[in-house]
Every structure is written in C-alpha cells, then in structure tokens.
Amino acid sequence: MKRTHLWIPACFVLAAGMLLYLAAERGGAHWALVWPAANCAAVAAAYFGPGARVFGKRPDGSRSVGVVAWMLPFLTVNYLTWRLQVLLSPEDCCNEPAPGLFVGRRPRPGEYPKAALVVDLTSEFPKPAYHPSGVDYAALPTLDAFVPDAQAYRQALERAEKAGTVFVHCANGHGRSAAFMAALLVRRGLAADVDAAMLMVAAARPACRLNPVQRAAALSASSGSPRPS
Image (cartoon, rainbow, N blue to C red):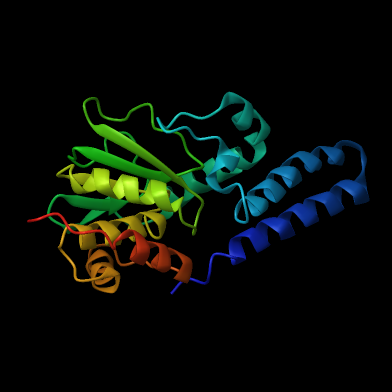
C-alpha cells in the first residue's frame, strides 16, 4: 500500500527549502531559484486548502494562462518527468478491469481506447489537444495521491454510471484513476465494495494501489445506489 498522501507535500516543502537555501547561499543569478521554490511551496500548501485549484484547471480541461505562467517551472519539470516515466514504463496506456471500463495513464496521441466518456483526474495537465472528436470529456482535477472535492467526485461518478464505455485516467494510472474506477465498479454493481473492486482493478493493472485517503474517499463516493445491470 502507498504511504498516506502527506509524504508528497512534505517532499515539496523540502524541495522549496533546498532551493531557497541555494538561492541565499550562492546569491546572484541563483536568486531565480526563488520562483520554483515558491511553486513547490504552493503545491505543498494545496494539500491543506486550495487543492487542485493551484494549477488553474477549468471544468472543460483548459487552464488559466496566468496560473500556467506563474507555475511554469513546476509544470515544466512535471511534464518532463512524466514523459520520462512513460518512456521507461513497460505498462500499457490503459487496462480493462471490466468490459468497457478502462483505467490508465494520460494517453499520448493514438493511445485512446474506444470509449464514450473520458474522465480526466489530472490537475497538472490540460485536456489534450488531440482528444478524440465526438468523445465526451469530464475533468475532475485532483492532486497526485489525493482526492477531489466530494460533491464533484459524486457528480463525475453519476455521469460515468450513465456513459456506457468509460476511460478513466490520471497521470500514471495507479492511484487517482484507480480510486475512481473502484468506486465506479461498485456503483455499477460490478463489485460488492471498494476492496473487491480494487482486486479487479489490480488484476488488470497490477501497479494500482490506494492510500488510506483515496480508499476512504472511494468508499464514501461509491455509497450511491448502483445502476441496474
């Protein structure tokens, strides 16, 4: 099981501190490091208040230009890290824990499965410009290893319940998307509870795990009545 989500903001606080130390210690051009340090501090703080709003992602998947400009150092490093992870990972883009239900990472061009609805749980990436024409899209911005707003979570699940085939993705397809898929499996009556649903998800995509915060949110969000089969 993953550690609780708190290790992530702790790492960002540490990174911010190290960057500020380098800026103060070396001076001169190194004062530019205050910018990425502030980005790291903002992301750490987001886990205790602002949440995914720190990245300025809108309901249609676009992002605020001003927020992108402010968070540019963090977003650039995050994107390059993600591309490297995708390059080195042997995993498929997505896997199918139940017929017509796909869970996975953010797709690259040509990697979308055939689905009526795409649920995007990333907060750090915009809706891809290459999103397939005619495929419905739902943004549920969520911080890495964390959970979305409870009301938005339920609304997205209700939409996914009615959509037929669904592709749920986050950045790497292990935590945020797995939690949503587990809740969806329960609400559709395909699994008795979140733990049983996670066995299905992990059987299809073995690296999927939930931390305690994600599991608790999925349990709560999955408590609605399942749609008749």
